[in-house]
Image (tube, rainbow, N blue to C red; front, top):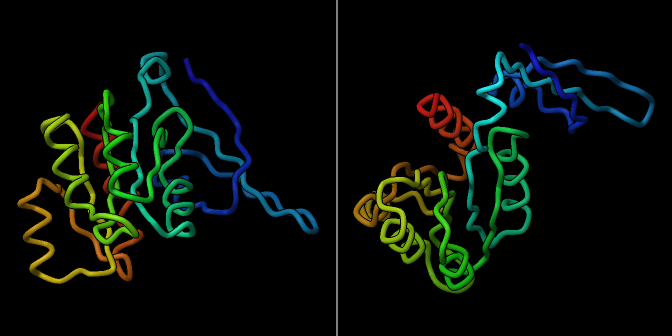
Amino acid sequence: MIHSQTLNVPRRPWLATLFGAAVQVNTEPGRDFMKLSPQMSDDSELSQKPLQALVVEDSPAIAERLVEMLNIPGRVEVVATATTEAEAVAACAGRVFDIAVVDLQLAQGTGFGVIRRLRADAGRHTTIVVLTNHAVPALKVASFEAGADHFLDKSKDFPAVPRVVEELLSERQ
């Protein structure tokens, strides 16, 4: 049985097709949008719980963009965001995330404490993506030692975030 659902979202056809959706772009004077119709082949996909995501980022603009990129109806849901290490650690209490995107340099604290907390609470269950403007070899090594799975440079690897999510979704099937 094929199910379809339509969602009007800002124009990002590349993101929609990346996550297996049909795209129909409509334009009207002053209103551009696309219809995103997830292509689901059976009821098992509908009953599967969406991936639960955490975004830890102190820049409001980047955090907003990440939430926008990660929220895929029925597949990925950003259930918590944090701007400081303390907020992120509090968000981890009693909760296991499937994926976490973590900035290393926060206004208060660092992403390293968040990564260690995620690993302590969830073991290897959570896929941890470090997304930083400080992509130097020493921080990359320290991130992997703390428990990160991916290390991305904000200035050049930002578009790789959806690919990491798609890999995780593919593994889940």
